[in-house]
Image (tube, rainbow, N blue to C red; front, side, top):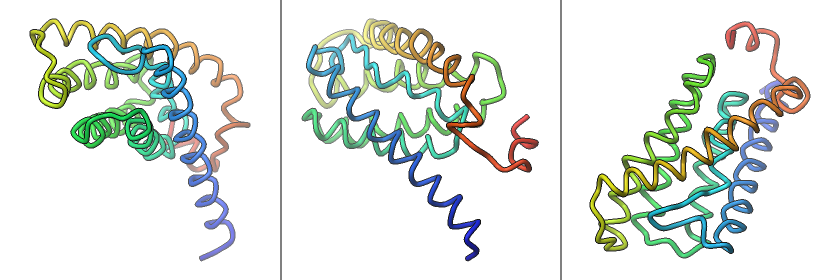
Length: 175
């Protein structure tokens, strides 16, 4: 393997690790204020779900971060597994939609709004009507992603080439 290839692999792993660590820290911080779980959850860390727009390393980074955050905050095993898989699926679709203005923010909100209520009912025995949980989880996710995430994307967009360097060939295919 060439050193150029090793360099890009190292960058990918570093970016994924930093994103995972940020996700964990932000989730644990929000959990301290009882915002990271329950029927109404505003996980500040979900703002990071816009990062697949910048780098493919965000897809595994968000997944690993979600797994670790759910384990650290004492989530039920179904939440650790299926909640993290929801995050993985949303991140992958966000990456696919990265060139669609604002539309890239929809997958995390939609996937979590529809999937997390199922986890709340089955894993935690939340005795609330599914449509109500879709609204409350969706509202919290919308605040995190449409609000904080969109702002984060705008700010990071100014430093895109510095924070998320890509080869010229990749830049052409991302347009």
